[in-house]
Length: 448
Image (cartoon, rainbow, N blue to C red):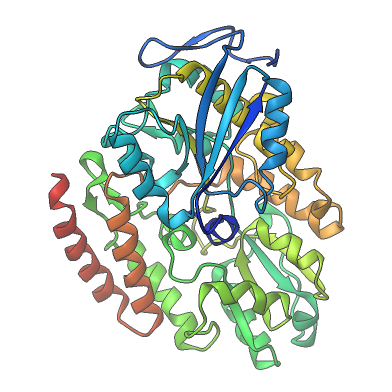
């Protein structure tokens, strides 16, 4: 709920409480395909150069009205009038079970669905995703590299990205001034270190800030994965199909010893829930927070005098940032694969990304062209907004590292997140990671 989600809290909050379906007429057009005419699909279908007359069913976690998807569907309707869309939405927590049940029926419903990127490997392994390699591999250079790779499993493409994410360091200028602290460097080639941030956050708290440092997603792998990777550690798993835990190395222990120390010293709060983090920073109660671009609209409407900088890096480490969001997958039993492919291509590639261009909610694009559209949103018009845009553009193209791609991702994330929570609450980092590794090894035996 990489999501942004990871991301995910925001997206899930926008989803409808109950499934809804509306039949909408959708439409044709001659967008440049960027891939040189027709492309063949995994089972003989192709992305046609002219539109068929067809009806496709789309399953999303975004409600048509409350999540502002109506404008997206209307724009597709204008571009492709011979393709009809039956748009359905379910809450995020129901998405995977709904997909499992419907695809298992082999009736082809839905034709296209929202796919949470860390779960694409499992969807492919279970036979719930169509192989898109032949049809869409030629469009690879249209995407930011890690966004495209998020849909790859065992060297085949199973989903097309429609959104992306990253993380930034936000700071409260008034609280830093009160503590006599300098503003963090705003350039990606002069980024602050975690070690310096620890010292400065402690000083800000001592000077009166309620919190020194917050994270948008406490104890979650999406947020914390970059810490050990910056130090040279792995993404958390290795071996055949990434089914061997790999998070007990010196780099992982060092990273989470630092993480635990933030709470032990009182720099970051132990009792705060992730959903309480953004409101606390927007209310001016924290000197720093590490959070995604979705915080920017809230800050623009707040009274906080805020600034933004790149996510920090450990001394001697390499810059690494989180990434990932949502992709579109195709049902392998769809009876309208060519029409489904046209919709997927329009959403992800055409016009820079129809999804990004026509949805009013600002969401980070997975393509360089889509990012240009995204950065034209009004939230990036202020000086700090413009700085954020420059940082986001750089991080998504240069420092982003995907979450581990494994069919056992749900077990991986659940067990590891609990270890992070234990460390936050004072447990020994090495012991917690060792115990989590043993637990995950047992949980993954069913895949081996």
